[in-house]
Image (cartoon, rainbow, N blue to C red; front, side):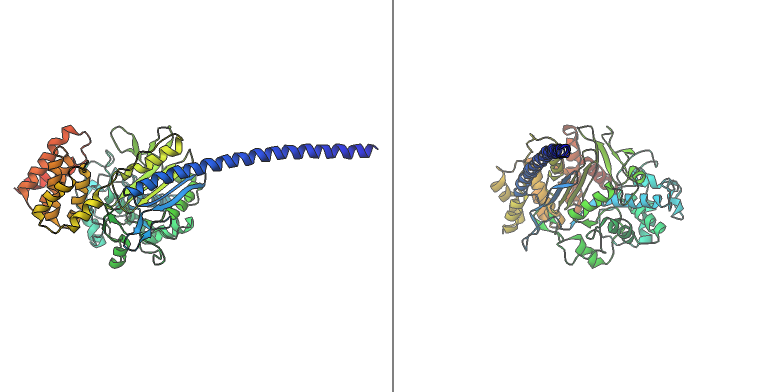
Length: 504
């Protein structure tokens, strides 16, 4: 009888435990369902915003992930308009200056392997340096505090390697090394050469073996990946003019110009960049100590110290008082951005093959949606350049009449100087200078107080050697400085005026 009671008690306890487990499992399932519902809702909100942006000119791909769960991973617009190939998560894009994080990681990896020291002077690796450059350190190159200028904007300048570096080292420094900050592609070109000298391998091979392959990245690089079975996005200037792809030019050249190697021009997919993010986060590539060195804020980028430069990354504090590790890149056509919120375990990967203003603010809108359920994103303004371009291409009259016809048809709907400035830029890049000047002149008539419009007109006159007109346009651009504290055109206008005045 006692045995029967014991058995009954055991069964009752089992039922009790089973009931408790059912309750726990029910709560867990409900929590998981709630989390999934919230994730789906967030994904739909971001997707709706990106679809609206696509309708107004955005073309590219976006990946958003939180807590190792991909919330959204989609393409928008076309990788190849002519053949109607849409952008996708595995579309290959030029990641531009986001490439610098790979150079930073490679240098830190070599330091981790005791093959170099971050405080070593570059005279360790280069002979016959001018005195003012002998003591420049690797750390200063990494943080843009070495004093070198920005560097060439020609990504396909195939000046032989030794001549390129000889010329670079003869350039005058902008400031005493270590005393200031000035973003420098040239500095990262030097770092690329140091990687080659220390490793005994060419730059891309070292990155492939030590960074990309361990991370599982098969579609990242310059020439080494097999691009044949992938969709490489064509680049569309202001989303209207097909500029082809840089990879096609790399293949034609058979090499990568020193003007871009190690500072930009690497191509990748959002899927591959997500693998890179995971490899960094899990210390698959670098030790925790090395990762800390890679992403530590060293040198202030701006006077207000709102952002600091690390090693191939920019670091700042979010409005939630959390660390942001990021970098963007722009090659004149394509735009790329990598935004990482380590404390919140969130990453945004943003690739575009057609830069249209203000595309650079789109990741901020996505960030706001991620951290504020009630946030309503600001629409990407409709970009009229496509319509303007189609009209201009179809126009059969003289260039002299083009200015009048554009004004007659579009004056009432052109609400921003960026539209005609963008259109003029298309023809400037195509070297159709008569059209470019006519369009820029109209822009200064419609928006006479916009300094950037005058700066663009000055560039066009400068290119065709109309010195007096160029001086007048640049001077007017600088006169408008007081009316706009953010005078992003002033540096160009000032330097161009100096060139013009020195030749008069």
